[in-house]
Amino acid sequence: MSIRQFLRIGLVLFLCSTTSCRDHSSQSVRIGALLPLSGSGSNYGRSLRQGLEIAKGEINANGGINGKQLEIIYEDSQGDPKVAISGFEKLSSFDHVPVVIGSISSVVLALAPTADREHVVLINSSAMSPKICTEATDYLFSFMVSGSDEARFMASTYVNAHRMSPIAVLYSNNASGIDTRDAFISDLTARGGHIAVQEGYELNSTDFRTQLTKIKASNAQYGYLLAFSSAEFAQILKQSQELGLKIKWYSYSGFETRETLSLAGSAADGVVYSYPSYSGHFDAMQKFQAQYESSYGSIPDVYTTTSYDTMKVLAQAMAQSSDYSPATIRQELLRKSYEGLFGIFKFSEPQCVARQPMWKTVSGGKFVPASGN
Image (tube, rainbow, N blue to C red; front, side, top):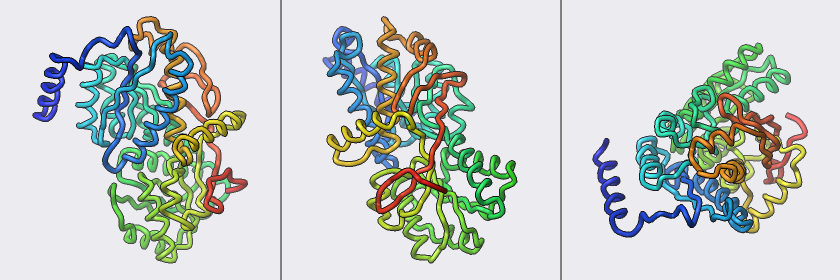
């Protein structure tokens, strides 16, 4: 245990010895949320928190969970696995929450063994690394579409349309970027496709001209962009324009954020990206989007939408668990099918949601379904 973790636990013990750790069990049902509320992933943390808060408001307005109000205890992971482990220990050991909602691939992967050992349900509501599903433990559930699902969809579509054109790959050098890149390249080459060049960059980079110059030299007409933050997406697109890089960019669902559009401007027009399909649930999605815009004056991204779905489904499972224990919540999540904004789903082994992707694009400064790719 690090000195920082020791001091933090000591502080919590001190506070518990005074007034702050009284028993809330008769007043509320509590869960934990370990989100990147600061650092390079803070825009995702903000989106996730907003989705959870909208869902919590609806749940509590409708009587809560078995008559008890839902309470969410937030901890800041800073997007750092070490900080996240400390926060998880606080939530599980001192707040005694049965469930922790987490995000960021490296954080979720680091927390999974601890969640399994402590028998605390860990729910991934945003991280996309394929390893989250392939290495899932008994207490890890993923509500987020896997990066491998989007990568396979991209590879299949691309080979069918552009088999003879090698594609460039530009990716963030983190768990999500690397693992999704690997899944894409593996599937693409197995289908007879070819890679023109692959270039990685470090998180929080602002200058991508070296990588983009190499992509330009490869003469690739198409590129697959696996950036991490909205700022990185925007800078890559703007610098592509500045360098005269004539390339059609494909991307994944993390591309769809209001920040990406506002920062990239016209450079975002024409980007085509995969997104979980909500066919058959268009009215429900529109209602949620209108509610979000009314509350926050913006559009919900995939992380906001998935976190909203996560909380609503979790509340249903917890309502069937009289003791709200991790074991019974886990059993309820596995027991039946659930319906969310992206459709009906059922957890299997591993406990991950499989979602059929669709194509969307940016046209006239708006995110819209794509008629072609």
